[in-house]
Length: 186
Image (cartoon, rainbow, N blue to C red; front, side, top):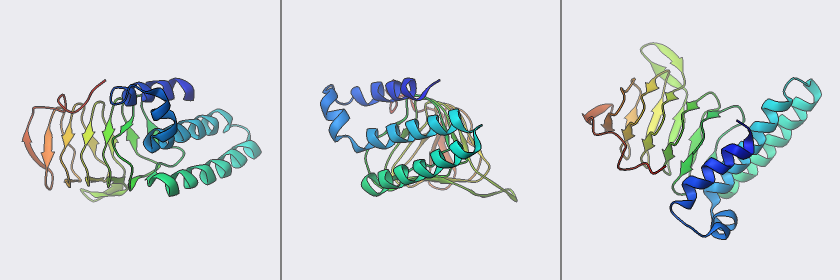
């Protein structure tokens, strides 16, 4: 799927909250951050087979995404695999490792860190399924898998694999299997 198709899907998620397209395009910093990420990621993966161009696009992408991070607080590096329909609820300090994989129609709240870490004596980054809601302040790290339709509560720390439809709070504590259906609109 090309960058503009992904931006279109992302835009649809933002338009559920605000029906005024001008407000979304000109005043929604979260949409800006995801759009710049989609454009630079698309260019990088399209042109990566041409060595000099790949380096130029990679360098330009790092500068643009760093400026986006300065203005929005959202850090998503080139190379991160993110499915269509990404929705970031509020601006402010979101850090995603470049090797993370995130599925479709996921929500990420502010103060979230998704990154590299250790779990069961292995190092790596998470794979996050579809329709996952990640609450404010959540930290997800290590070579783990987060299933589809999972809700991760505010300030949760997750470094173990979580099954589909689980609701997680605290430190890897599953409190129910009511899923993320009440939190995700798509």
